[in-house]
Image (cartoon, rainbow, N blue to C red; front, top):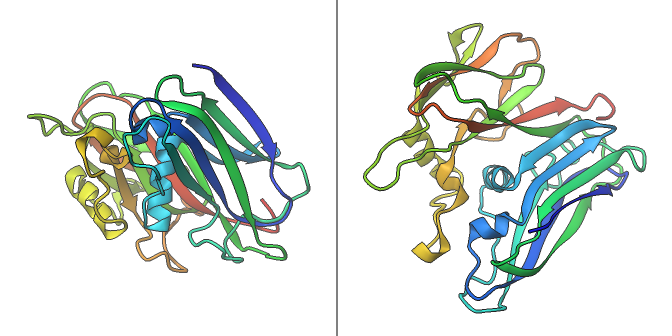
Length: 289
């Protein structure tokens, strides 16, 4: 399989969101959702080298579901050779789309870049292409915009408690955990069993959350995420849990970390393994990115 990394200039006007659609044909059988996502390795948005969004496709899929309260659209759920299939992912720059108060501020032409890191499918999907639309809000003067980042957490030295340091300086909306280990056949093992948020080493808001409850709590935003038949494979959300600090998406939602210097997640690991942590933050525009 061939890997290709391509950079694109984004328009200069304020941007609400991007709509990225992958398009291709079944190669002999129904391409699973995991195989569709495998075409897109990573999406990065930056301005003058400063990262605004940096996510692998599985994490972007889950961020789309969290913010839009619905699953990404997948077409062509048929096991027919050469049947057209598409998967659309929304890349948001605010909690609500088309919101001139919360979007990516305008910039000089050429300052903002979109980078797509792709791997051309070899056996599951034929002639795959990517289309991109930008949803612009000319004249908008946003007070803030959404910054989304992901970090791979190194495996701790063993199971049990481990601290996960988190950035301070912005308003924290959500943490998204993508676990390596989740319950499978005859197993109830989780990579992380419990988790709490601590500010200055004191539990705050999220004091002790069980992973199985956090997974079930996804239903407050999107309902049941699983696909309908075994041949389609498990949903990417099967390995995702949200630590939701902004459940109502209101004006004062989230946790203000602008004056904090010591913030961390206290995780109880069931398996000493790597996990992926995604953070969603609101950044004050201050006249620009």
